Length: 161
Image: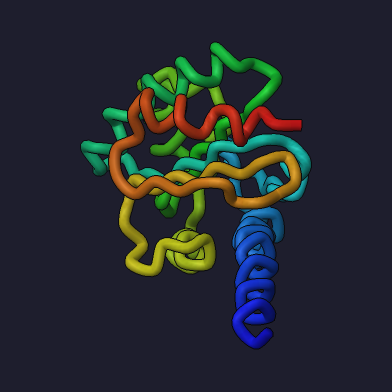
């Protein structure tokens, strides 16, 4: 009986932990590339790919074309959010334009490291990507360069009704 109860508690805690992690994202207000505040709560209730990156990060640059292609293929079904672990909006705006990032891009400023840690990345390494379903639950995470196979693997969970 004790084992069943422990298994039940574990099963119930996994979705709660996933939802709690995403809650940190939706509680944040970050700057857009024009340095205007944007409450990320506006993205609640839609499937998201949240990608943390920096301009100086070579692997981060490698995955941008995959994110652009995935967004184009699933326009209106999944949104990509790029969160630059940066201090100033102007260089991020120039970078986003140069790399043709056609998805919402934000500047984390002083919130960057605490936010990335609250979202399950204790070492605050980048690139780091979260996949959040329409219920607001984290359905996957990826540390390191995101590839097409990673996006294909999580697509069904993101698009599930």
